[in-house]
Structures are given as structure tokens and as C-alpha cells.
Length: 120
Image 1 (spheres, rainbow, N blue to C red):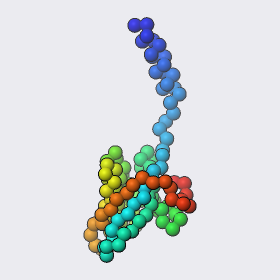
Image 2: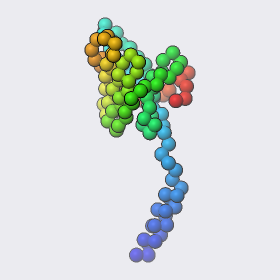
Image 3: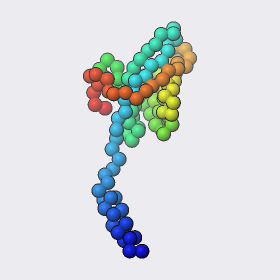
Image 4: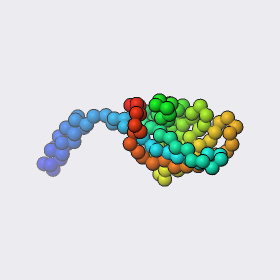
């Protein structure tokens, strides 16, 4: 019983010193097969706490809209397509929006930020 007050004091001190969860942007290197069988590659960054996703293209970040991030998947809409990334196995699905054909399959893996990438 004497240890209970000490444990409460330690717990209260840890709670007072602990800061809020900080957002950590995570970079992905992704590739998929296009409609003619060629491999396309791109980099993407996402942040689970801010619920944002962006593609890195031509030195710029292109922000996705209607982004939803769960512990299992990331879904976001970009001007030309919708993207779904399965966080469990790295599977990538891209659905073109402008009548450019069906579903594209690929994969993403965690990576370092690409050279020249701005801070998200």
C-alpha cells in the first residue's frame, strides 16, 4: 500500500512531461503498371495525424483531397485519379478518373524523402 502513492506521483509526473503526439510525415516510393504495360514510379508523402497525402511531382507537392487514413489504408483523390494504399501489405491501387481505363495495380514501400523534396 505504501507504493501506491509513489506510483501515482510518478504517473502524474510522466503525464505532465509528456507532450502531444507530433505529426511525422512518411515518404513512400511507389510504382505501378500503366495501361500499356510500362512501369511508372512516383513518391508520395502522408501524415496520419493531419490526415493529408501529397504526390511529389516535378519538384512540387500535389495535395490530395478527400484523404482518409486509417491503420489499414490510405485513400486520397488527385486531379487525374483516385489512390488507395494498403498499409498492411504495401499494395497500391490507382483508379483513373477521366475514362483512361480500369484499375492499375502496384506497390509502395517506405523510403527516404526524394532529393529536392520540400518539407510537407
